[in-house]
Each structure stands twice: as C-alpha cells, then as structure tokens.
Amino acid sequence: MTKISTVVLVHGAWADGSSWAKVIPLLDGEGMAVTAVQLPLSSFESDVAAVRRAIALADGDIVLVGHSYAGAVIGEAGNDPKVKRLVYIDAFAPDDGESAGALFAKFEAAPLGAELRPDAEGFLKLTREGVLALFAQDLSDDEKAVVYATQGPINASALGGVLTKAAWRDRPTFYLIGDQDHAIPRAEQEKMAARMNATTDHVDASHLPMLSQPQAVASFILKAAA
Image (cartoon, rainbow, N blue to C red):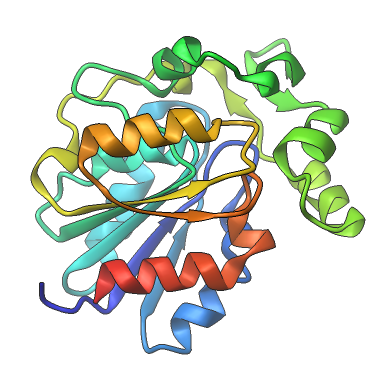
C-alpha cells in the first residue's frame, strides 16, 4: 500500500475534537497532516456533513479515523474517493442499512446504557458515575472530571442514522479494540472487526484509549497510514 500522510480524526459522542489532544502531537511529530473534526452531534446527517467538509478541505489521500459513535459517521462519509483507509477506535461499525443504535441494542452487555440521561430536546448526557466508572475508568481523577464537564451531549436520533453504503466494504480497514471498554464491550468490538475483515490490534484501555494510551492509538493510526 502507498503511504498516506493526511489523517482526519472524528470524535464520538460525549466528546469533542479535544479528545485527540494527546494523539495529535504524536502524529504531527511523524510528519502527518492532521485535522480533528468537531461534530455538532445534533443529527447523523449533520455529523456526516461535517466530516465531508473536512475531507474536502484536506490535501491528498486520507486515513479517516473514527472513535465510538463516529464509526458510523466515517462509515458513511468515508465513501469519498479521497478516503483510502478507515480506522475504527473502540467504534461502532454498521453495515449497509444499519445504525449505531441498532448495533447497541443487540449488545449482550452494555452497562453504559443505564447511565444515559435525556433532556427535554432529546439530547443524551452521561451521568457522572457513568463517566467515572464505565466511560473513562482508567484516566486520572482530574481527567475524568474534565471528560464529564466537557462531554458533548448527542441527540438520540443521531444514533439511529442508517448507512446507505458502508465505506469499509471497499477499502482497507483497521480496528483497535479496547479490552477494558464498558461502553462497547470487547466481544462486540471483536465481532464487528471480524465482520469487516479488519486488521486488528488490542489495547488494554477503557473506551477512551486516545486519552489513557495515546501512543498506542497513534502507533495504530501510523500503521494504517504506512
């Protein structure tokens, strides 16, 4: 495969672009051109549109990286011909006609679901206990507090966004599995990665390996770009 030097990073629900803050310098230090998208999290369509704008502005061929919910987003936006490889980090990986929410509903164990709280407009937020014990359990207390305070609530309808064509079906795909993930359990990640025939690796981390083990995440992305 030809080496790619442009990376577009897409954060998940209850996060923003700063969730990649520890990974970006590591990629930049290796000569990668990096963009971290800011998703509105107001609808699946608006999130896909935000990623498509970032792809349009980026130079050359792209490695498109999605964490968590953003696995669904890159699965749709990644059909752009500039996107040559996909990287999933603890992410949902819907197929044609599927959504992140539909996959989540089928999980045999998903303790994070009990920690979601909707507001009057249908946006979901994580409880403090959900962040501390299930979402970011391997971060420092200070980092957990920041994750909880800055979380980006997601409109529940976005989780129902259905892929028209799964981009992973016709481009090389990579999947980094979080072994201590309580949001998308390891077994479910393994099933999705196997279905995609993805190149996989494991990291002994929570749902937020980009914060707890940024070097492992950066190294995996660089592997996909090589």
